[in-house]
Length: 113
Image (cartoon, rainbow, N blue to C red; front, side, top):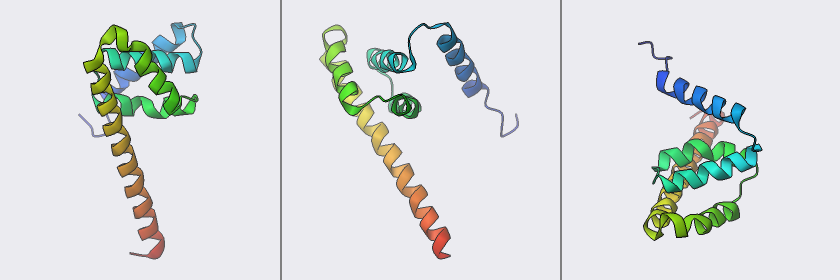
């Protein structure tokens, strides 16, 4: 398999595209529903990270995510909400670390290091 082949990611992208095409919700509502679903299935940090960019692009805020956690708590239970909070924090920490590394690399490239 060639390095640039990404069959799993390609399949996920295709599934997501079909889902969005057949859904009558707007982009923001879709992302709210997806975040709630991630909480419900006890998704790992990587799943939140994969959705973070799109969520941010459609205007999902920290307050929205907190509201989702509160709204689903009676259905999914306290352990899932606590786990989701930790997974969200880990995803955010990873995203910040990546951004910091990219900025440091840019600064080093500009300074000739």
